[in-house]
Length: 242
Length: 389
Image (cartoon, rainbow over all chains, first blue to last red):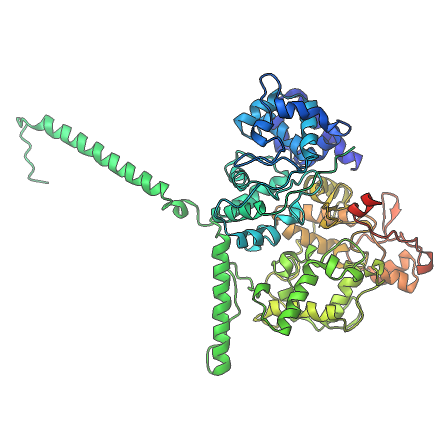
């Protein structure tokens, strides 16, 4: 990454973390930082051993319950709780910070994320990114799988929607840090996120890319694409930035 | 109402008032409950949205488009059977753009097979035409929606525009000649395994042309369809600004295309976000290196899914910034053994930064003017292959 582009973003990011939630709101509106956040977190995590997060993930710490109590010991998730295994470390770290800052709304996740140190967040991100867990997801929303595949592979320019794979990779396994894997994700979770992009409970998408897509998709389309993505093979373990 | 008694001694006045209050309250409750039920049932949904903001669902649009094509086909068949029948008008969508055939409707015939192969070549050029592609691009990087999206150089519009005389090579070009040009410049075939575009008459041309022809079935043969090519916005009065374009790039483009325009591959080694400059991008002979052409593409289509979100000036500035970087050489420079200045004078009399000195580098100067003196090309390997070595 070219230094001149990253430096101001990294500086703002550091300022945001130091100043807490008030500054974090500014971060959310500042698109360049939103764009670079996942890559910056991935770089910051370089060198942290994923294993350092194992106890925290499996047993919790004091008032923080174990990640595994909801996301499963293998990071496979279930129902409305997302699979974490094989998502990029930068993406996971970005989400943990978004919960802590209140720019992504979920009471349980905010409670946990607020109590994690920066190092713990980065270690957890690398811990789950390096996991490889077979798919436990299946279509469960009665979506039209044919339509779901159409949206994933080709998109629908009649309603201004690019294909999922044109950003999330040809197998839906994600692209580098900023574009998370979607394959083998639980349909209830994917559907809930698409709804959250619409009603504003979630707005931390680079360039508001997902807001636009979610607004254009009908409820039937959201169910179709969520169900289709659940039928795909799970992503392999991510290569961690060293 | 006029003969209503007004005797002030009426003893039931109080009771009447209470009755009215009770009646009104009960009525309000009934209206509210009924309204709430209707609201929850979604009856008012379409009415509450301003007409201009209501977006049809994909299913509605698909049904409208299918109906447009069905009606056109019916009218054409009637016209064939009876020349006196009404002349069919071409099928259009809700916004007035031509509705192309869908590849899944291609017939189960040898021609349909060719259409499907053409679609495959167009969408997966990296694999389907691997021997003839010398960079990381696919046709669909510039022709969005597999060549069906208006204002993204749709192939249904281009199909009827050839044969045509082109200033670029000063002769009549058939569609095959035109696609040959795409391979030569946009796909940088000089760095491919074959070392150049597919030879004349190659099946690749036939299949791609079948696909274009099929898309365009029912379009008028007049070459000026709405949505054709890219809508170039008016050029800013004081020209383009490369430095301002860099800021636009960092804020709107780098998240996908990378801070150095390098593009991104997924872990399958497949290019997801195309490289905008450097070895994996189009070469100095491609149309997209012209600032006006790139500004039109960007204005209408970028960031992906957010077309028309940049101002005209931003589109021009970022188009200039993208094209102010080094990229594979103009094949005509190598073919003719020319200097950059000679190539500039002969082939680049248009809106381009070719031949200018930007950030201390002479753009176009990444070759020495003859094939023998070219630096050896590094074979492209996917990240997985690189990791395996």
